[in-house]
Length: 106
Image (cartoon, rainbow, N blue to C red; front, side, top):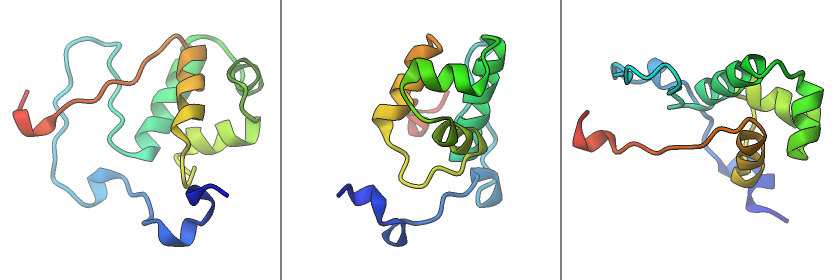
């Protein structure tokens, strides 16, 4: 059993805007999407899917995930998000995940 199956031990995900005055500094590159929270990650995936003119069913099939899981991801409601599944979705969208060290400034 995956440790992610027990969501009672996990803290709830919240949009960073609700708990921080952090102001996102976006890079001028229009292809960089901010994903500081699960809702923002889901919105970014949805935007990429729509940009690629894919239905949820088509993307789910290409990524090898269920449509229900993809719907949860796009809504930012995927407790215990499995990184492997996320990476398959991003790969199907020809996208990648980048991690920025915000402590170093921009």
